[in-house]
Length: 481
Image (cartoon, rainbow, N blue to C red; front, side, top):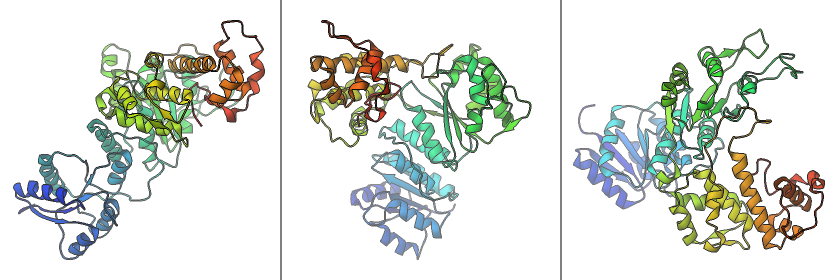
């Protein structure tokens, strides 16, 4: 490109326009700014810039709509989207609409010039601007999360294998679902499997399925997770805990795109995108001989790291957001002093631990207002999430480590409510929004009896409780309806 770079800026905020103009002019660029979409479109009929910088939220036509109109007539024009609302939806929408880059406010003014230079040197390939599919709710204003959002926006449309790393409880499955939901495979299945939670002798059948009579108890043919995910995405959680012999079979599937069911003689071919996740250091596992190096390189094509909550510096925002999420339709207010107290904690269990604590506060609240008096410091220890360990011989698949922790949280919530109600089971059930039968069944599950000789009864009679009145889901996570 010869001559000075011609840059147009569209933003309804005059101060932002002024700052960008001065910064870019200082680098020798020709800058013109507009307060809205109408003025930009009028000017575009007479001339075309090298780069367009556009705010995402403006009165009338917003930045995404404007970008779509501009690309309708000038598909080669690179557009840099600027926004003060740093969320996944904005990032994904910007990249799916064909944006060259997504720039959240506040931004480093000095870095904008280099970004514009890169945009001017490379013309965009226009992507599909169809409607966005439903997405899991992910927020995060922290720069580290903005990097994650950018990665989702860029990688969602591709078929490339992605390895997601991060501590337990950081939301790796949410990121995997976001990659799937915003991809061309969104209408096909998203199948998640936790390789650390399934007994070793069942993993092969779980992955690849089996034929009738393949082993004792195989009374019919069963499709494995690979077949169930055909055309969609297969999420392999805790891939670092996969047994060595299964690593070999997985590597062959990734190479050939086909496999044999257990007991089968005919190959099965599938079209599946692989997204894997782990909390482990896979490089170290390779060095120690616990993980195949060739499989590691197959999975580690693109890596996305999810930062722990203590690094994100946006814990206060997460507290407010997750409280609204868990409270659902119930209008619950939270004291800012409590928000800041929770935000100062290091949260070793990350978002999962934060959610558990908020769920307990919601279950035990006596009003629609949460203050410091509604918070018990002991909950921080009771809800700490351990890193998952391999399950050798579990009777049924379940995330290792979660059952004990969440079961402990449920037991503690039940006991505290019973004590607050002087062990009046009916009153406690009403407070927790449970049926009496469900309450008795859960008391029986946790062995809860009144210490001063409360009359014993057969709690198992509550086994047929109405699931519609459950306040706890089957896996023990506290829900508030």
